[in-house]
Image 1: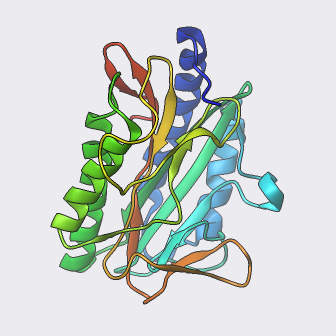
Image 2: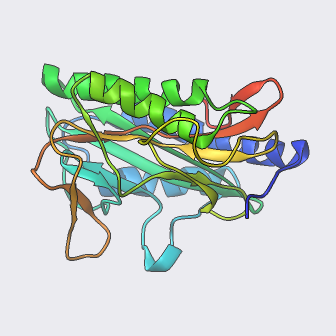
Amino acid sequence: MITIKTKEQIEYMKKAGEILAACHREIAKMIRPGITTQEIDQFAEAFMKKNGATPEQKGYNGYQYATCASVNDVICHGFPGKYALKDGDIVTIDMVVNLNGWLADSAWSYAVGEVTPEAQHLLDVTKNSLYKGIELAVVGNRIGDISNAIQVYAEGEGLSVVREFIGHGIGEKMHEEPQVPHYGPPHRGPRLKEGMVITIEPMLNIGTFRSKLDSDGWTARTLDGSLSAQYEHTIAITADGPVILTAQ
């Protein structure tokens, strides 16, 4: 069942999104060779606490961290740890902020030092694909219109679109209806209505779209070891067009 949010509830989510976006802005300044993903995670949790919020991911189905930190071939749900980022790495930091019971969700991929032209192309296209999807998040369109726009653009740029992990509705729960794939035919799926709040979060790979799961039961990697990137915003569907609640 898709829940429709009131303007007041969307405003609550926007406040959570502002904290999340501010945290990402600070993380962007921290990204450099030598910093560990654990240090980034600890910073993010402290930043949320300082701003009266909590990390919704921590404790979710036993997950132990405030963020997901996915490096290079990790598509999503990577554990923060003692790994020190290296020049040429790419890392995606994904987090969900809970402010007074209302949630915002955003992932961002970062280049560490100097990356290869191939890696930079992956980052640029993945970010662009997110905004291609957001452009179609308007009242009257269907979820499939967002999905198809992302797939057509990404594949046109020579990249593949991950199938196993998709966007979703969000509100007082992290994962609500509807599901928001980043691939598929247009004009399919639920119709977008004013008051819906969704995440759009394309994950693109340089190689195959197929993934494999580590023995930890969380960390998803590209099957062929190729690089993966992800960008995600929380979006409110309004009469005036899409509103990015996690805008940086």
